[in-house]
Length: 264
Image (cartoon, rainbow, N blue to C red):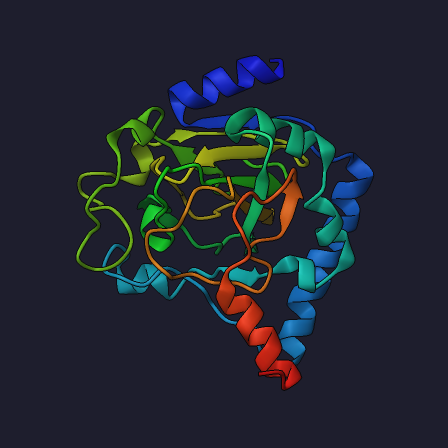
């Protein structure tokens, strides 16, 4: 698909498979850095099991699953900062939301072999609601992803439903109404990216294979699309990846800089 076809598919279905964002050499280098990051965090006792909380998973299943998650990967290794300015990715981003593309946050998710945790079906919207819903994620796989090792599943067209009510147990949708198995598996090769709007219902099954499933997730938005709640701040939030920021820098930032410098 060309960029116009990609944008049309995304608008209609709420997701998109972007093939070949990374070269094999880039994939291998990022695998090494991803594993090294997890190992460093483990040495410094910062590693944690980041399984989703709530009653969507039975206790005995929860005890057998694990999910490693690291936020703000661009602060962990330079290669992930470089990834944010990948031209192939930003060409697609521009086709989806316009010439100005701003970072919201990044994260690495690693599902270990045989026990990698599942994600219940959910929308990303409740975590960082915005006025115009330009927010989207790209999940760049560092391993081939299929149903066996827990690839992303989406419900095509579900972004058109708008924000949905979460389950009382957490920021996920009622599992009896939105079972993971009913999502369309988006199989991908290492180096591919799965792009989806933050209103698109998505999730993933556990990793039951003998292979890892590692991915780098990047959330982007149009900088002129304001958040409706002041939540989910991150250190890298607001970095311009392409174009300009048409919104003036908040006055609070200037005040903070003056205060830090001892200027009244």
